[in-house]
Length: 246
Image (tube, rainbow, N blue to C red; front, side):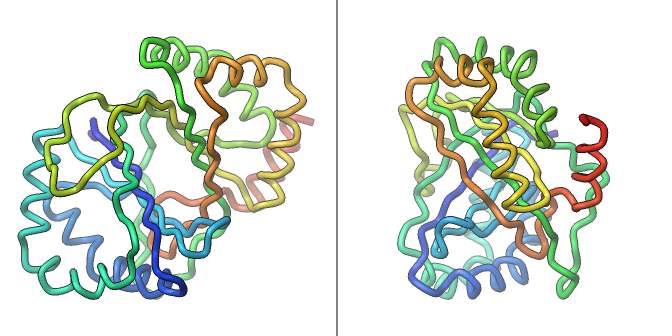
């Protein structure tokens, strides 16, 4: 059970994303999991060819500190850190989150190296919220907004609010002094996501919920990398969902 998540967005040197994806998925997945971390997903940002996005989770903040120290002081990172860091311009865009509704990962097998890459698209919607309103907005999302999003073709995978605890591993900076609500959703492809966005834009209830935010949301359109657990919906699933809502 994960109580703390990191949403990590890396700005890479031009043309280096595929090099990092290959290195990350070959060398860094299982060694982190062996130390008690979970890696729900790794993604290419579809709107920025030099952006790599990934998720990492921990049981709690103390477990996070211990696991990160073990990994970053350990032999795997020591052997590959120069190659990894050579691809990056910035790795400090990190949100600490706690789940409102966690990912259901129990039956998702990790693709082996060389398996066919996952299809589909995953969106992450990052909403700036007032800290005092975060819990209310999260409840309202579950009650009112999530059913609308799913009616218009999304599969909502999980939702989160900011983890307010102090960063227990300061060697890795995080974004501090911010309060956000984040949800992840799965789609078959970019066209399905665009159609979903257009349908939601016509819903007064969606506009009303978004109107309570501190600033407009940021939506990341993410393509799962080959070994990501999280992935988009297959086209057959989207067709089935469309039939159910017809």
